[in-house]
Length: 343
Image (tube, rainbow, N blue to C red; front, side, top):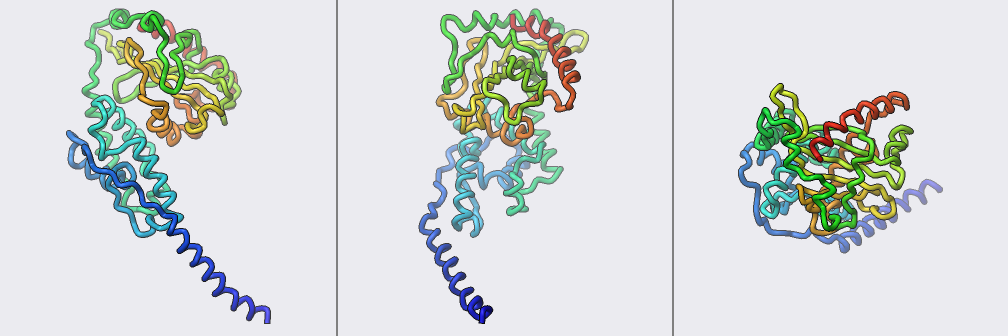
């Protein structure tokens, strides 16, 4: 008798689920349709074809969604992902970006596909046709490298001091006022008194020197960056590479200063980090509104640096304070060379 009652209840449960599913569709707003204002130009066809197949369903105004993608509650997740993807990079509005911004976006594409973070694994699972083959990743890599070739070295035989003479001392270049990012973060000239916690290069022929304040350095020494403590601050000085007569690569012209400031309450939309970038000798802030970090910076940090608290270039986690201190001591020895390019 008990089993008979259970069998009778099943159709009722099914009908309730079906009714709830149908009701959800009344709250299913379609993704906003936008015009294609300016597709990518001067990009090889083989690169464009890869991007159209693997990226455009999210990063463009031309979506080709499946039937399931349009059904609530799945559509809610899909629409949210598309809105966020468009904010970060929209191939249908490529003409709104400057040439430098376009180049920077493509470097980000290269980093994402190289790390196999794009297409998103969750998306690729339900859209297997979007997965990139090794040959396709190599195609994107070669195009990204071709862009970096245009960022040529400062001519050989120029010493770092000669190259550095083109750059005013950053503390005087900002007179009479201190530049402020749209999100309220000010340029901080005190970074030169912080400890060097890393150095890196990118395919754009740049050299990047990463400094950390005392709170950040302590967090690294104690391997306490999950999450990073509030008050941690990191500065990244970016220079063009200069090739000396003997072939040595050293910092040349100053490009920009980048900052990350940890405040879990203030920057909830960007994983607790506030971002700022100040470009050129005049230290012009990046971004027109405070949303610039949500629309660009955090997308790469969220995908590529989650394991290190959303910060790149952290000294390796080695469970050895002595080894980390040795790393920091070695990095500090590079300061004199870097300061010769800044001052």
